[in-house]
Image (tube, rainbow, N blue to C red):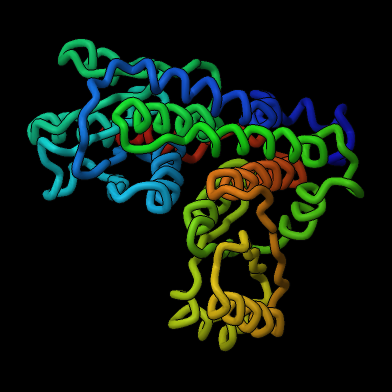
Length: 346
C-alpha cells in the first residue's frame, strides 16, 4: 500500500509528505526570516520559547541544541502564563503557527507585563496584530500547512532570532543539517519502495503496537516529537520516555505488566553518550526485548543539529506512513478541532 501513489494520494489530502520533504528548505527559509525579524541586538540572560503543540516542539529542539552551543539557558513554556523567573533581561520567542493559539496569546501578554524582550513567530492571526500594536519584532512564516508540519520553519526562525541577538552562530551546523536531510530524502521519501525505505519498514512494524519512543540527551525532545507525530499523523496512541530516568521507575512496569506485550520500544540513538550510557542502553534494550519488540533509529551526521533533525525527519515519515497504513489522512485533526469547538462554546 505505501508504495502505491494511487493509494497514498487520496488519503494525503493536505500533502503531509510534501511538507516533510521540504524540511531542508524550511530550515533555510525560516532562518532567513528569523534574522530579519527586527530584534535589536542585546545579550539576554536567558531565553524562553512560549508555544503549544507543533509550535512548541521547535523550542524543545532549540533548548537541547542551545545547551551544547551556549551558556545561555533556554526554557520552554506551555501554559497560559510564563515562569516567575522571566525578567526584562529575558529573550522571549512567542511562537504560534496560526497566530491564534489562546494559551500562547496569554503568555504573550504575561511576558509583556514582565517587560521581557519579545519576538513573535507566526503566519499572522491575532499574534501578528498584537505584535504590530505593541511594536514587537515579528517573523512571518508561510501559510498553508498544518502547524506540526512547519517545524523546519519554526526551528529555523528561532535560530535566526538567536543569531541576530548574538547568542549563537549556527551556520555550519545548519549547512550540514540541510545536506543530511537531503540525503535522507533519497531513501525515506514516498517514491522509494518499502524494501529500500527504513521509514516505511518501521511503520509496518509499529502500526499495530503502542510505540514508546525513548530518547536521551539531544534525542529526548526528538522522542517527544515522534510520539506527538505518531499520535497526530499516525492516529496511533504513542508515548515518549527518557533514559536513564526510565530505568529508575518505568522499567518495572515494562517487566511486570503483561500488557507491555502490546507495546513496542523505539530507541533514538545518536552516538553522543559515554561508556556508562552505552552500557545502560544495551542493558535496557536487552531487558525490554524479553517482553516486547525493541527497535532502534540511528541518527546520521556529525553535528548535534544534524543528528537531531535526521531523527526528526525519520519520525515524521514513520508517523505519516503509519497513518496511511491505518487508512487515515495524516493531516486530519478531528478530535483537536472538536475539543477547541467545545472550549469556545464554554
